Length: 324
Image 1 (cartoon, helix red, strand yellow):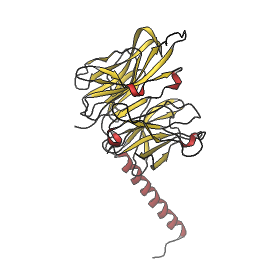
Image 2 (cartoon, one colour):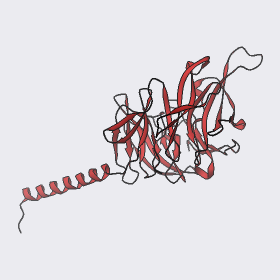
Image 3 (cartoon, helix red, strand yellow):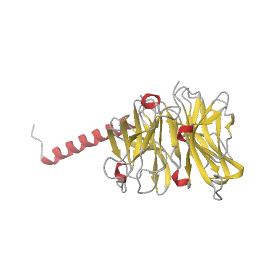
Image 4 (cartoon, one colour):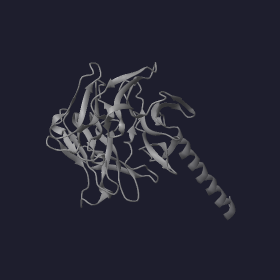
């Protein structure tokens, strides 16, 4: 059959459009579990497109993480304090919320601020970044001290990991942001709060705070922010890490193994750098913060075909709800 040039071009266009539609359709059919997130100081839960429910109200709540059984959320709640915390007269303390009943109660009120909590893989203890006021002897200026704290969920007993306790002069010098226990042979993983244009590393230590080591960071000159990795979280299999990779002109989501070798990288325009760790679901889909005209949104990334899309507007700090 003789096909003219115009008809041939039309057939090719239809074929390309059909393929593109199938690709987008496949990307939108990625199975997504429920997700807890933050909007204007309240916790919300995303259940499916267009279906969201507020979990807390009237407080300043942040940084939720869901327990491995998918039943409980641990998060920061900023409450009035008699002492100056890093947030002035507000102190960040740890609270728990049951997703089935909506009941919440305080898990820990320690001196200073308890920040960026996360459950261990069994859901028995919570690790957090602990920063408190400290004034050395014969010194008139107040300083901060920082450590990774750990609290038992059942007994509420807590302690700081002494080998990691350090002195901090300014809030920007925090070193133990978003500690996560479990990946890389049962280690605790964390990274410093990176300065804009600066460099950052990912560190690991044993669950008792000993054996501190560097997992990943700049591989050439220390001044190259383009080689900074930070804010890591376990992958679906917990045998590697999903993290942010910084740069002066872009942000990327990457996967690195426990030796610091990069497995894959996806550069994403508008990625919110220096913000919150990307979160990997059991399905492998990764949720992350994205910026649209300075308004934060939550997007998802399929590591398989590297497609990404927005699922929640005016939202930040995503935490998947594990399926039981």
